[in-house]
Amino acid sequence: MIVQVLDIGLVALLLTLAGWTILARFTFPAVVSYVAYGLLLSLIWVRLFAVDVALTEAAIGGGFTGVLLIAAASRLRTTTPTEQGPAAPLRWAVAVLSALATLALAIVVLLLPDPSPTLAPQAIDNIAITGLGNPVTAVLIAYRAFDTMLEKCVLVLAVVGVWSVASDRYWGGAPSAPRAVAQSGALTLFAQLLPPLGILIGIRIFWVGADEPGGAFQGGAILAAMWMIVMMASLGDAPAISKRWIRIAVVAGPIVFIGVGVLGFATAGGFLAYPAGIAKTVIIFVEIFMTLSIAAALPMLVAGPPIQAPRL
Amino acid sequence: MTLVLNLFSIGAICAGLVFFVAGTVGLLRFPDPLSRLHALTKADNIGLGLVVLGLLPFANGVLGGLKLMVVWVLVQLSGATVGQLIAQSMRRNGPNA
Amino acid sequence: MTDFLFAAAVFILFMVAIGLVRVLYGPHDADRAMAAQLFGSGGIASLLLVASATHVRGVEDVAMGLALLAAFASVAFVNSVAAAGDDGVSGK
Image (spheres, rainbow over the protein chains, first blue to last red):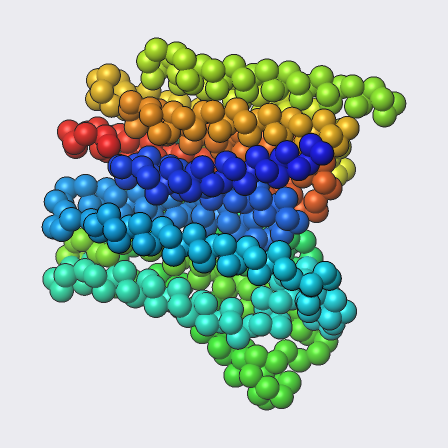
């Protein structure tokens, strides 16, 4: 009985937060609400026993999106809005359509046959061939490796997109990561104490993803957050985008993934097929470079386009 | 033995809940941001610490228990830093931060 | 025992929900950053209680990741509050 109270309470709080996020009149309260929404959603995923998704939601929804939105809001603070927001009838129409879509989805989910059609048993039955113990990782890197590879390519495209917003004369220069306005002993201490621990935790979460909840994306997001904290505390600078090492770091993941995929033609008979026997080794090899790429790309997304001319 | 552990857990968690109530009430009812900050940082750290203490008997072995402690240390670190930063920004910008 | 853990989780969530009032009505942005911090520690406490009650595997890793990232988000919020104050622009 108390479990139902918990679940209903979680949903009610979630809807309230969503409402506050939309109805907040200023940017900062909306972003705080949105990050709280992400953290609460992470709790709900744990409640649904989807721990990998909970970790990703905490990393991206709770951490990164918040910082990204705050950085965007800071950049917009000094500009004046050029047009009015949408008119009231349009907003009402959008609200009604969204509610109808939600209702339709809810009805579909509640009307699913019981037991609902699922491939989970087959996924778990065949997992021994991949050498992994975590079915979510098996789905991401083995059964649906093609989708994951394309997602990593999309991340590279996002970084290129952000960089291309710079004006011509700044191309190749360094972006300015959001940083504290004044030297603060507390922040410096924080940025010195947290990253070593965070790097350890990030690598552990990546490594343990083969058998327990975790994986490359979550570990990479945590590593990215550690780099961001160092930049925020002014203990390090965002690299100039013309530097070779950052470019290699960002594209290493997709390139290795595509390379392994092409090699799959020779070794196992198909694109992204893994040779039996060393499947787990290949998967870990690909995941290492994916983690590196994510850890390099996410902070670059937050740092934004270059705003200084390149130093020659 | 299990009964003693259960009682210990219940006691520690209830104490933690008391501190969470104190922190929330302080956040809502204290007159100005600095005192609200004081209530929040003190109460939440101890609240979470007591909850973690109460959950230690149910942890997954020694490693699980260590991870719970690491979580508490991380929250303390972030709470302390956030407290300092908020207070510094309020002192710099006057009462209308 | 599991019922007690669930009840404690409900209670903490209820407290955090009340604290969120500060997010919406808090006169200063610093209050909102504080409410975010409250949400972080309260949310982690709830997560640990729920996971202990339902024996979810691997949840301590989620709690560690959440603690790291909640710290990161809180510090980013506070930096932006400080920056807004220094710009002389209203913190909203």
